[in-house]
Length: 91
Image (cartoon, rainbow, N blue to C red; front, side, top):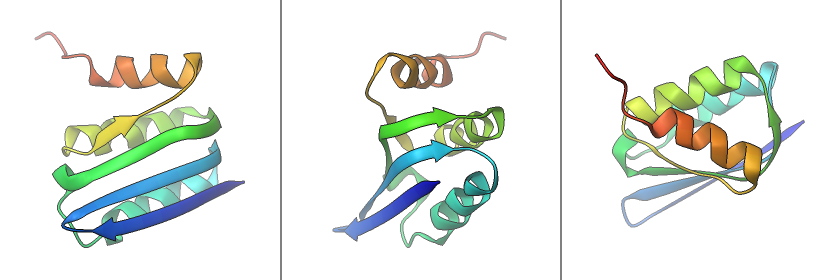
């Protein structure tokens, strides 16, 4: 189960996630992200309360980051995944 909370104000949006970013919840997150009323580079994705994620969830977070969204995590595993996503890719 995943709880998704979207807060939009002053041209910025924060998407807070709580639970497991996996299975059908990945699609729900993508819908919420695409439905925000701001551009992707004005979105912060707060992963502080994410307990687990599957490969589809990581792929979506990579796409969100590539589009300009900011990712913020908490905890060893989540921080590690965020760091891996944010590392520049070598050619």
